[in-house]
Length: 144
Image 1 (spheres, one colour):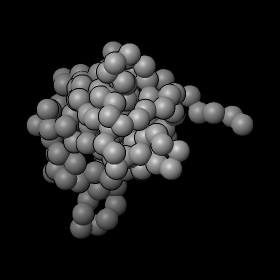
Image 2: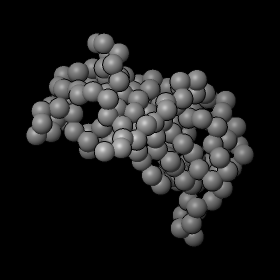
Image 3: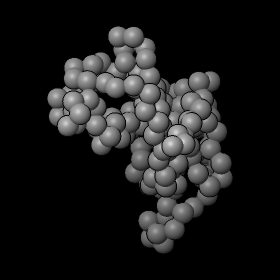
């Protein structure tokens, strides 16, 4: 089976956020579940955007939507592990914003999961993607 490889852009880290594995985050294999990983990364993304004065519902006047998500798992995590979520946002293209997340165990620094998410901005009235505004590109680039 071929595995995806996500190259986390270290130089573009714009935010670190502490998180904890909750008992409800555990799956039947007694480790952090896939759905919980996505939720933890969503929390980290919201916090990272807030640190830049942005929100998913208002990115330079447009809401954003997830266009794709890829996650690579490196190690297991269990309750009550303390995690640090690192968020990196490289310079956006004209059409999309790539957001990278890496969850690390605080105790040993080992990576639990790395993800790449593509966000697109949408005109809510037309329901169609719009180009990433220059002002937003500048704000995201300055924040890194």
